[in-house]
Image (cartoon, rainbow, N blue to C red; front, side, top):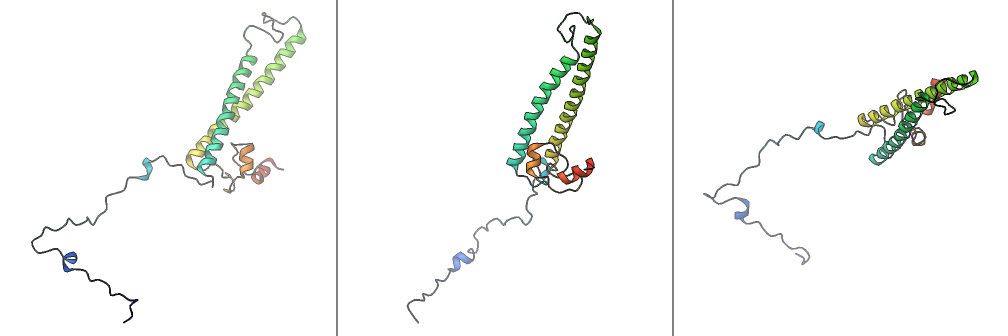
Length: 171
């Protein structure tokens, strides 16, 4: 035998089997305890291929846009429903001239139209928050493909990819 190979030490009998009469160690249970249900943890599935940090970034964009729109809607509402003044700032609600009446009416129509558009955008933002919660944010609702991040950065509440949006608009 060469000196490079050393014989392996043998295990003693005492380590292999407990001595007779010695208390036996408690056996591990054969059945594992039931795991806690996954439904309890608020896990956000990432179906759209976006990381948690990217979802957080888009959520912040949505929150910022929502705050701007809510302020705009309030301003437009106050403007459209001018309480006690006309466009010129007069306290009388009766215009001095028929042209003033037409101007006031036109400005009110514009304000109400803008308010309606911004209210619709607020609903789209709320729907985007729901898509973040259910994990479908970032997926096109039509073709189920990923919406490019550049599009989501420009329009964070986008539901459709560019190709499907073009089809929808007939372009």
